[in-house]
Image: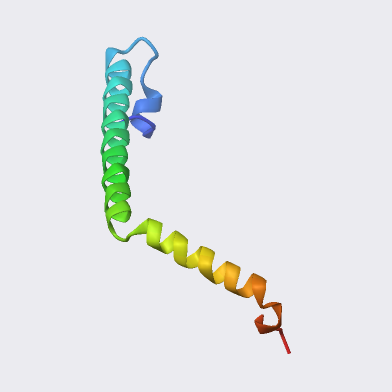
Length: 77
C-alpha cells in the first residue's frame, strides 16, 4: 500500500511500487467520483426540499416590512 514503510523501502525500479501508485490513483479517482455523485444527489434533494421562490419572496417581504418600519427593529439592551 502506498505510503507504508514497506512501500517506501521498495526500490524505485520495483514494479510493485508503480503498481501500488496506480492502484492508489484508481482508488482516489473512484473516491472522487462517488463523492461528486453524492454531492449532486444532495444538491437535488436540497433543491426539491422547499419552494425556494416562495422562501425568497418571504425574506424580501420581511426585509421590506422592517425597512419601512425601522422603529420595529430589535435593539440590544
